[in-house]
Length: 116
Length: 116
Length: 137
Length: 137
Ligand SMILES: Nc1ncnc2c1ncn2[C@@H]1O[C@H](COP(=O)(O)OP(=O)(O)O)[C@@H](O)[C@H]1O
Ligand SMILES: Nc1ncnc2c1ncn2[C@@H]1O[C@H](COP(=O)(O)OP(=O)(O)O)[C@@H](O)[C@H]1O
Image (cartoon, rainbow over all chains, first blue to last red; front, side, top):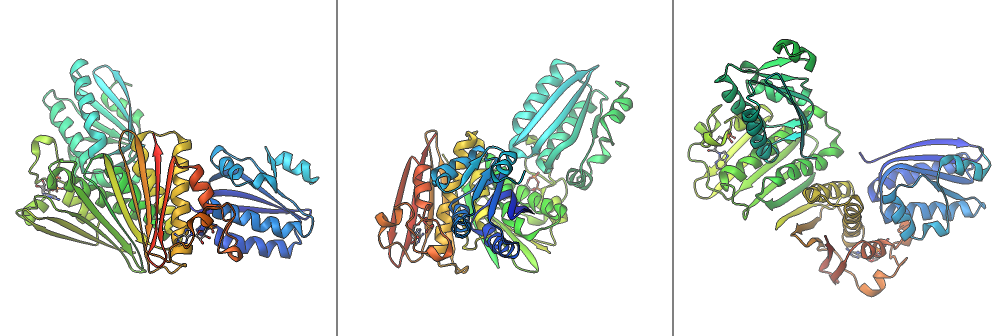
């Protein structure tokens, strides 16, 4: 099933819904597409909805850290929401929660960023 | 996922709903259970609902032929219904349609046997 | 060209595993569901035969499945070092089986041939059997 | 004891295949979803490392994954004949990576160790790397 992404831009924030599995293979193209869009729409914040992300490993975490390094130069933020158990364990283990904002629902994420 | 079966006895007919995959491994226990039930309830007809059977190979066909040989001694019948594309091809190729009755829906199968 | 090869114990619970492994390997190809199901069925038939006939259900043996693909075709091989087939022509006949009392249908080869573009059977009595299936894409 | 062994091309599209193959092999065990996911993650990390580090993304190489289980434990091995690791202790350190500019997180070993009951790394520079993971059940 690989990885499908649904993207929506709203007030300088990019909302990304991830469906499938995030690994070295599936992040390759996704990364390029993200960087292109962030540039095109002058994106400050990224919101990842992980409800339907069934798998992530350290390659996926690497992509998130890379985007964090990008948005922090603009004082932007990475918000991650709707983590299921499998994904949550890797996110916690990797320490990602220290540099990203974790929210239960996408609604919470929107409120947090003031784009509700 | 292997094979799950849901069994209902009604007027000497045994209704079997198959969920999963039918191969050499999954038919082994299933066969013994079927034979036991057929004996216990003096079953004449068998109705297999294959709507949620995602796979069948010649080992599964072997089980059906074996049961056909059993019911025909009592003038009983084997009715197969709700075949999906994958299963239908193997059923057709194996010639099973020559010895079993094929029906579109379980409703049709019940009407056919007069147990509706 | 992409390729893989699996060795596994000749146990019936591994039939579902090898079907899933081959299907996962081919998922990148975006094949039609019907074609994927045909390949899945060929694997299942050939591996079942290695287990029940080739190795006569002794789980201490090992079966080898190879799969590869390029732009034109998929190649599948199922190899055992089992008892072998005495008369391949006879074995391929619809309904022919040497295990009638175990309710085998004798339709394995019929299904494998119908679902392959090419099916090769190489077998030596006492040495083993290799089934090669080619599927154009 | 049940066992299997896979050889496959060192291509990133095979990472999802090998995850699925290992998971299918272990399905008979009726493991908890969390444990199955841990094993899936270990396979993914180790195989990714063999592809991107061991073989430096040259797809003409082959990776070998072995998996077996008995009543007590699951054994998983990922083997490559790649460049090897110079200093395993350093490699295991969280955030350490030799491919920073490719956005690797350096967390592969951290995750593999957290998700294994035992993790053994054997590596010889110029000869290759073997990762062994043991998981009690
Ligand atoms: N791998 C094998 N090793 C030994 N004998 C085999 C093998 N595969 C097939 N055969 C022989 O060929 C016969 C026909 O096989 P097949 O058409 O698959 O029917 P079935 O498996 O139902 O018997 C088998 O009964 C068996 O005698
Ligand atoms: N199979 C391997 N072959 C060669 N080097 C490896 C292998 N696996 C790991 N390494 C080395 O160990 C380092 C740390 O690995 P890891 O913790 O998985 O982080 P990452 O893969 O993100 O770099 C890698 O950067 C690499 O230098």
